[in-house]
Amino acid sequence: MFLIVFAVWFEHKNLKQDSKVVFLIEKFNHGENIVCKEGNVSNKFFNYESGTQSFVSKKDNLIIDIRKCEL
Image: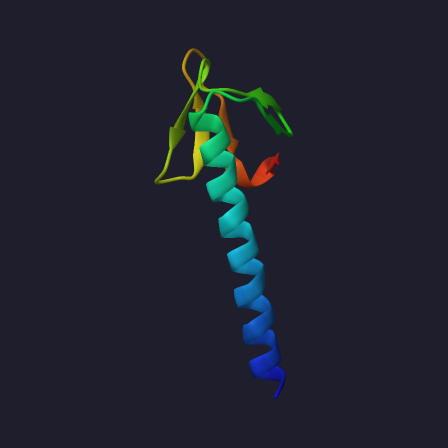
């Protein structure tokens, strides 16, 4: 019984995280600013790397994980 509850909770948590990531990428692609721990991110100064799910600065070597960003 515990394994079933854990599996349902884990799947729900992953689906919630995935929908957040999709929404953030949508905002980024439309040129909106995204608030992250390290600072604001926009497509003017950053590129999105889908393989690592992170934002990479166009000028510096700054890499920001999308999971550290907020809606």
